[in-house]
Image (cartoon, rainbow, N blue to C red; front, side, top):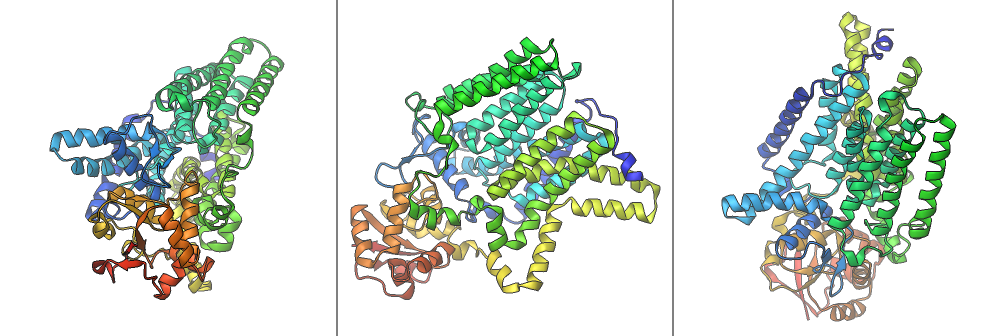
Length: 601
């Protein structure tokens, strides 16, 4: 079998072809930006419901406007005084640096902001594609370069992580994750140390990456247990890099008064201690047991694992329970169950079955490719490592669909090997070999699965699929920046609006809002539910208590319809019916616009 034999390739040097990979990734990023520019950079002027990108923009603007580095309060969201965000300043620093540099050259902060919104995602896309090509070479040789570039560019573009104004932390986390994997695949303690550094930074950016960090640590430990001389220093390098970066991240990004606060959604000293113990413990175990036999190495790793587990339980026992334990039950029922990225597989099957293929098929194929490579060529380090990361990411995506942000990109690496093998087989110039190559390309592209599944869904259940896909345009759903022009001209006050519009409002206007789709804004979001779902007189009392000056009503946003469905006799339902209370005075110039404003008396 031509395809079978061509899967067995000679592994390249870890530096082979890096200039070509870098050049290709730069060209792909330029083409991506050019395509966005030709379309008028639509995402620069319409968030499309990307609350995190708009919230990040507001957080960076507040910091550059004088808010201290260690002060992560969002003062313009939630009840009076705001709340502390769980995000890291690690993302703010490079984006803010671009803004300031361009503003210094042009004399315009607006120009600096726009430049950062374009340049930062583009730079990250270069890094992501470059690293995916490097990892593919390490797995299956130089023939994977073109497949990795094409599959990677199409997949990452379809995911929307690197479009203009994508300023949230997800794209940086992905780049760090792929860097962590790529450096771990290459031999040498320096690269392993770099992998550990990436793992620690990724963890400090967002605790949701903990499963992938754990897999990386387990892979480094496995190289110690089943090591060959070539990889002897991997565990030492990874452990030292991870421990060192974990300590620096704590000192550089977490305010000292918050170090020992028990929290699981953000980096802290408690979690840093666990990370430092794990890193230094792995390095020490490697140094002590490497020259001994496998039983000694295994015993050392078991002791280390127990020490890490006990320390984690003692320092952060709450992190082993429900991550949303402190969330109000109403927020669970009316908000969390509606958050797209938090939906499990079974909810996707129920609500959006056409999305199953695009999110889960290519990772499964990629895992099959890796298993086939192991069965054909024998157990090899790279295949097992990639399989571990893919299994972890896919398992997370079954629990919450946000895991596909990692499983889909991880899948690109073995899929590039699959296509490269098929291309080699197609050199026979037979119809069968050519057909295999075409099929390999097609099954490797998430875009193909997405297009096909939605086409089938449109035939089987056109109405249901249309509803599932229809999120409306920015003009009707109030995600376009222009929607807030009139609001921005009003005297600063607190605005009552749905949670989906909270982040765009504080990013584009001087106002503060009560609601925003963040679990730490529990009190503010509950107050908004009380106002919109309560009877008009009850809503009025909430507004007086929260000192609401304006009510912003967007009839085209899906959240508005949900509130009407949940509370058919509530304030929102009455406004939709046209029964506006007398204490709400419409601002005339907004009547008939997507966003209608009312003054509260």
